[in-house]
Image (cartoon, rainbow, N blue to C red; front, side, top):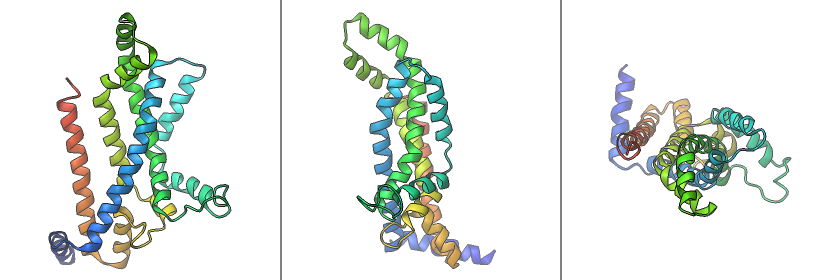
Length: 233
């Protein structure tokens, strides 16, 4: 037990003294996950909104597929992307992205996008009938109606993005497979925790874990605030 207490004390010291490696890994994690979620939002919000307002053959089969992908195991997402980006894959002859931050962003995008689409779809489907009826009654065109609906679901949309961010920043399997956990290049919080634990550097591992826990707490606190405040309004 004493070794863990000492590790905790040294972890706090590393955080307070501004250890360069610690903060470098933290900022890289935030950067990669933020970019992935931003792209997921740009793609997923319009798609989810469109799904919530349209009917077409096999729509609910597609929706069920989205729900399945919302729980996609990160290591499976990483494996699929690894095969696509490897030197024997279809993309490598044109551009080699394996073991780069771009590959990690793509892996996290695969995890975040179904979450954004699925949650936006649920929100849009609930709001669509009233919003579309009102907009059409006022003579609005389809584009304006769509933008009005997106505005009405802005709080669930923010909650969807926060949920997606919480999912991707805490995963380890996908980014380790396609990123390779390269020091100074693709090492992020979760992969660094695995590495430092295996090396027996419990102080660094605990420090990284504390930062990851703080980020998770911050994400869930923001989500709770939206639910208690703006979302309900």
